[in-house]
Image (cartoon, rainbow, N blue to C red; front, side, top):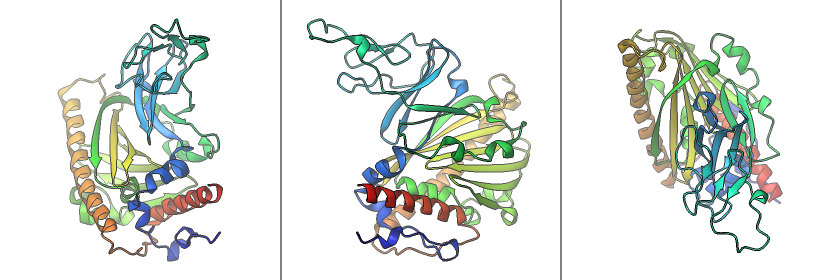
Amino acid sequence: MTPDADLLPQSAAHARSLAARFYVDAAMPAMDRRAVFDSAWHLVAHVCQLQNAGDHVVADLAGLPVIAVRGADGEIRVLHNVCRHRAGPIAQCDGLAAKSLRCRYHGWTYALDGVLKSAPEMQTAEDFRVDDIHLPRLQVRIWQGLVFARSGDDAAGFDVLVEGIDARLGTTRGLERYGHHQRVGYDVACNWKVYVDNYLEGYHLPHVHPALNRMLDYRSYVTETHALHSLQWSPLDSDASLYGDGDALYYWLWPNTMLNILPGRLQTNRIVPKGVDRCRVEFDFYYAPVQSGLDASGAARAKRGADLAFSDEVQQEDLGICEDVQRGLASGSYEPGRLNPLRENAVHHFHELLRHAYRETSVTA
C-alpha cells in the first residue's frame, strides 16, 4: 500500500499543518472515532461531584454516552449510558443520591453497579434472567481528583498521559482540593481539531485576545511537549479582584482534555465532536475552598462572577476565530502552511500524534 504523503512524520523545523481534508471530509468523524477516541482516556467528572452513593454525572465520550456513578460500596464506576433493552438513556442529566438507575424509555432498572434489577412485564420472555444483564463498564482512573475513563484495551497507559504533571503541580496546587461551581457549554461550528489547534498555541494571543494578552507575559510564554500531553505556561499579572498574581498553567491531554489552572481556580475543558464541522466545548469551573461554596461572602461571589465573565469573553473570541478557520479550510483555497517552530510546537506535537493514529488505523483497517 502506498503511504499517504500527508501522514508521513514531519520534523518541527520543516512542519506544515494538517491538510484541510482532515478537518472537512465527511468520513473524518468515523475515522476519528476509530483512530483517536475509542481507545483514549476521557475526562468524565471530578470526585467532588460524586461524593455520596448514587451521585452521578453523564458525559459524551465522542459519541459514546456514559454515566459515572458512585456505588453503594463507595466505588466510582463509569458505565455505558445505553439501556440493554432498546438503547434508551439510563440518565439524561447529573444527579444526587439515586437509589438505582432507571431507563426512562421502558423502565428497566439497574443497580448502581450496572446490574439489571428489574424489567417490567418480561415474565413471558423465555430464558430471560435479569441478573444476566448489565451495563458495560469502562476502565477508570482517578487522578488529582479527576475521574478519567476509557473503553479500549490498547491505548497507551494512563501514567504516560499524565507523566510529570504531579511533580509540576506539587502539594500546594493539587486539583483534588477544588470544589465544583458550575458548567458552561458552547456549540461551535468547527471540527474538534480546529479548536484543539487553537488552544495549543499562544501565537494568536496578541491578535485575538487583547485583554488576556495584557495579563500574560507573551515574551516569557513557554510551551513544553511530552509524550501524550503539553503544557503552556506564563507568568500572570491580573487584578486581585480576578486572579491576582502567580502563574497560568494550560495543560492539554491527548486527545481532547484541557486543564486551565490559575490561582484559586481549576477550569476543565472537554471538546466533544458533534460532526465534521461541529463540536461542543464544555467547561467546568472548580474553586479552591476559600472561593467555593464554603465561602459565600460577597467578595468570593464577585470573584467567581468575574472569572466566569472573563472566561466567556475569551471563549467568544476563540469561537469566532475557530469558525472563521473552519470556513477557510472548507473553502478549497487552503494548502497546508508552515508552522512556527517556536510558537506552534504543541500544534506540531498534536498533528504528529494524529498522523500516527491515522497511519495505524489505515494499516489495521
